Image (cartoon, rainbow, N blue to C red; front, top):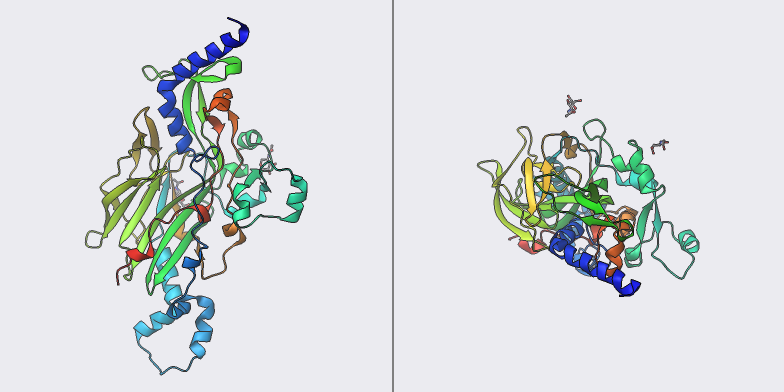
Length: 413
Ligand SMILES: *[C@@H]1O[C@H](CO)[C@@H](O)[C@H](O)[C@H]1NC(C)=O
Ligand SMILES: *[C@@H]1O[C@H](CO)[C@@H](O)[C@H](O)[C@H]1NC(C)=O
């Protein structure tokens, strides 16, 4: 055997060793959003022509048009129902605030939520590798917009490692129990008093899962099985990323309470129906968007806060996946990947809701289709032969690139 064959022999035996662990790697990669081009990005949905308001009646939902509308000669109709017609937009915003969730961050959570504007001050938009001079591209457009921005990244101005060493850096976010942190409520209007809303929570950093590894020098860390809860190698975190968008959605169907709720955790999610008599959300069905190994268990009911009408949810420690109950949640069976959640810090999201509606002027960053974080780095040397496992994975895409949980057709007339 010459040296090259010997080396590729070692490589192959390593690959064989890794084979039984490949579900773990896939799971970690899937959990930590897309690596490379696998799967392809979601097509933007929010700005398609079908979303445009065509019903002339719906124009009245827009705050900015209310005045024009009022100028039209109309018989005096002082009824309350009529009043709602004019203020449908305000009504929706009121409902959106009234039903905004209470999010319990996990005990000892290090990576707290943050505001988008604060985050944007600490990152630079960067194009993918291109023949054009990046400096030149940056001069041309401060923040790229629309489909052209799809391949861009928002890269931290300082090295990730350096930011992680500084506990007051942008990556650690803000304590929502001490300072107000915004939640971004994206509203889709379906008709009079009918709409669905996604509450988007932004965290500047998502922590990956620790994996027991054996350092193989130039061959990189080799994942080791954990024996009797003990790791005989070193624990390394894989799948962390800058930027983290989490969400839950509500569907309002013409009543002062929602009909349904969607809660999303990793690549799975659950639909709950609202039971007005019991003042609870009751589990209806679940779906898995990708990753056949993901089979989280969802609790039967979701409670509302004692005061007000706020669904109570729990953000998992580090990853911030939203669970409907505190505790330890297994979301991947083989190997076992767990999320921990519990009563750490409360985040009353209704104290600062930024309502985003396509009938209103949207902030510029809602036109950014690229990734909200740095490109992947510190990848396993074997990633060159197809093993995609990185300590830091790509940042996630933002709100305009995510699919809706509800469709307006769900609204029954
Ligand atoms: C830590 O981060 C804060 C906030 O960005 C910054 O003001 C401070 O200078 C940083 N400290 C160090 C030692 O880098
Ligand atoms: C949240 O803030 C309130 C009011 O300042 C305080 O009483 C409470 O102890 C805080 N909760 C936690 C978990 O820090």
